[in-house]
Length: 226
Image (tube, rainbow, N blue to C red; front, top):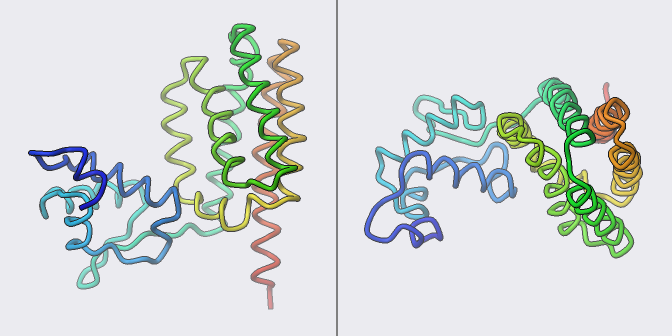
């Protein structure tokens, strides 16, 4: 029985808890685009009832994370590059707002915490530990959103990230992109430490746009036209 079921002895998980678990599996690339989601397997892994598992899948279908087809059941939905472009545009706007807010509102201690995470990420680039870099990168972006009280934006950004999260570990966390991301982080951090909200917002927007440009170039290389 899976960790979710073990964590809830004596009672089954709710549909929301099952949906959260499936979403986390998609984020971590344990479930990948096109993979079928077998109800019997999900019941065994989560300890949920068939009714709750189906409700969870319907919730995820409403988020466009899961596709449900008649006679075929549910599967993890992929994202087209046009969808990826739109997701990154939304992220750039939302996270840009948060970076500007952080520059204005964060305490000196919170800014130093952001600096410490950035420095640890730089060490990861030199050490080649991309998994650790990914975890720290998530902490860095989350800190910027959470400290300024932008919980709604944080929730939206997590939802925007989920459909493309598998791409990050398959292709995104490579040496060349990691070095570029570190350089972007320095620009954002410099603006934040200077208390320059407009510059911090612009630098964050550019950072997200650079990420989309990198993914687009990889997709073009892997799927050349003609």
